[in-house]
Image 1 (tube, one colour):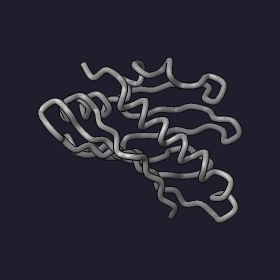
Image 2 (image 1 turned 90 degrees about the horizontal axis):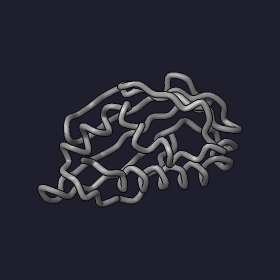
Image 3 (image 1 turned 45 degrees about the horizontal axis):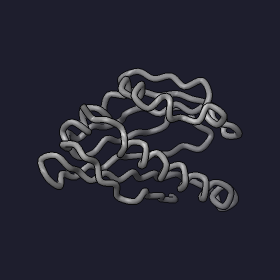
Amino acid sequence: MAQFESTVKMVPAPVETIFNTLSDLNNLEKIKDKIPADKVKDFSFDADSCSFSVTPVGSVKVVVIEREPYKTIKFGTENSPVPFFMWIQLLPVTDNESKMKLTVKAELNPFIHKMIAKPLQEGLEKMAEVLSNISYQ
């Protein structure tokens, strides 16, 4: 199982607010305009799932599989050519500042690993950057 981790991001918001926002996928509406339309198509979501199409990967559906209040949100794939798990870890720093890290674990054969390791790491880092910069009001 290959594991990819983002750098730890500082988020200027209370951990409870971040958790409540990110654990309801309807809130993806806040970042929809930051998703590159040339790379991600057919983007849709509800409170517990998100689906999209990525060239050349194909259709992917991600669902929330566990919510540990104010600490972790875990996701798994329901439909994906490469099954994976992702989780968002949160840690309070002060009453109004938190740390966030994203992790992905995927079962990749050596050939696929070489092809997607760099784009996956870059995508994970970009996702962490976007999530750390949205407004958690």
